[in-house]
Length: 139
Image 1: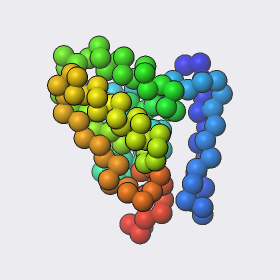
Image 2: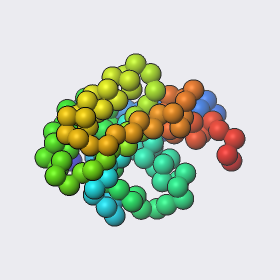
Image 3: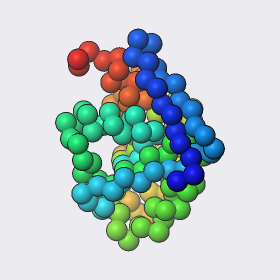
Image 4: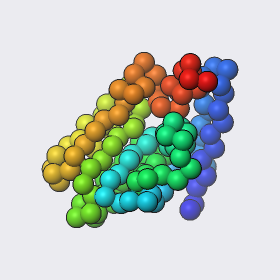
């Protein structure tokens, strides 16, 4: 890899500081199965999802965008795997950029006859899954 992302959680404020050296590229973390794909905005959302499921290994392939600039590369990679993929679950954040990303992924899914599920309803009222988890009363 030719870049590094730095994410520092700040639980007292319910936020994280994020920075990177060079432009971000997406990360693929292979799961136990490849017929289903999960897409996350950043690594903290992915780790939060594993925590919520009480898992240490992801069941399905996870694409971590590490910034919205990598969305076209994620889509191109998925396009090359449409013969194997049956469904996509989208955990991208809420807000205008999240809506734009979800629409793009939903359109891709429809064009390729893949099931698509936007999961942002799970953390409605929060910017991201990790934001929800840091600020919820589950603790």
